[in-house]
Image (cartoon, rainbow, N blue to C red; front, side):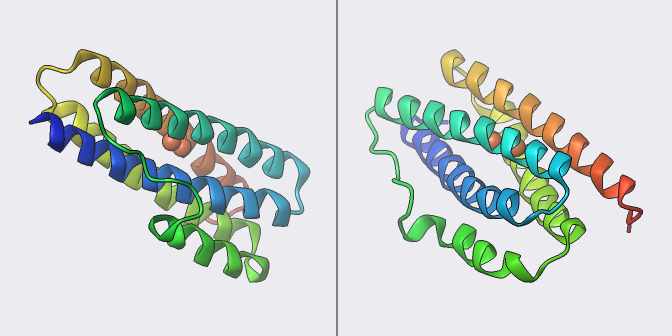
Length: 148
Ligand SMILES: [Fe+2]
Ligand SMILES: [Fe+2]
């Protein structure tokens, strides 16, 4: 993978992280169960760190990171606008979908980047965090009695 291709992968990951931050923020406010809401808030803070890591690495590689609130994160705001009408389990399912996509994208990048060890170790950490997030969400969905 060329450096430009690595930067493109990091930009895509950054857009997904920013969209997740927007969605999880809306969900943390909307979820009535305090323990679930606090869990989502804690995960949101990890996603903010991921976004900061990605922005820093894109700059180090000579790129210009996308900014929050722009057109590239519109998916997060669409989900945000819809979340008032959702049940907790529906919000958790949307979040789990974000995590599952992130796991696949980070795993693909970790598999394919050959020679940029700083980027590889950052992406490996993100991957492990996303797996932990997905595990937590699956557990919440099970506890709410809805595994389908
Ligand atoms: Fe993340
Ligand atoms: Fe995550």
